[in-house]
Structure formats: structure tokens, C-alpha cells
Amino acid sequence: MEENIKKLNEFLSDLEVMAIKLQNYHWNIQGKEFFVLHEKLEEYYEEIREQLDEIAEHILAKGYEPFGSMKDFLENAQIQEAPNEKITSSEIYQHVIQDFKTLQQKVMQIKQEAEKQSDYETSSIMDDYLCNYAKKLWMLNASVK
Figure 1 (cartoon, rainbow, N blue to C red):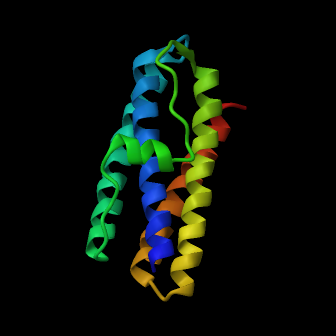
Figure 2 (cartoon, rainbow, N blue to C red; figure 1 turned 135 degrees about the vertical axis):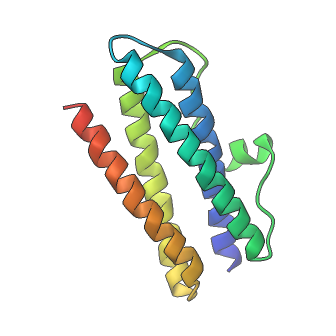
């Protein structure tokens, strides 16, 4: 169980860094797709904020402590921060697609471990995220063609 809690906290860390990164892009996007992508990025970071809360509360419900400091998040996240600078939509698409793939892979690992441990609550939550991220990746990839 503790290995999966570690993975859940790493996932929580990735979600926190991703939310901040998306908000950074929301503020710094420039170019012809500004209006569309500006709105979509806000939708994404608000949704990820809800996921953060769900995962942290799930860790608590399991009797463990979720990470709560930026230091912990940055030390345990696979997703990297974005610099605070202007960025084009094509660069944003590239980074966001890669980051959602990272989240998707992390969720698959958590689900596999949860299934091994008969932790069906965690497995069920991960199912929802797998569907969510697959749809986002399909739409993002369709947007860059």
C-alpha cells in the first residue's frame, strides 16, 4: 500500500506543477490562437485543481498524508515548471501533449499497482483519469495536425 501512496503523492506533485504551468501558459500565450487557447488552458487548470483535491483527499481517506508544500511538489514531480515568459500556441501544444502523456502513464502505473493490491477505490479513480486524459490527448493531437 505504501508504494502506491508514494505514487499517488508523485501524481499529486505532477498535478500541482501542471496546474501552475497551465496557468503560466494562460497568462503568457501570444499569437493567432490566443483567444481559443487562453480559454482552454483556464478550463484545463481548473479541472486539474479539482483532481488535486480529489487525490489529496483520497490519500487522507487511506490514512496517509498528502504532500502540501511547493518544495515537496517540485522534488517529486516528473513534469517540469515552465519559465515565466511569452510562449506561442505551437510550443504550448507540444508541452501540454507531453505533460498529459506523462500524467496518463503515471495513472496507468497507479492503477496497475492498485489492482495488484485489491485497492479498488484507487483503481476506480484512475479509470476516470485514464478516460479523461485519452480524450484530451486525442483532441490536442487533432488540433496540431
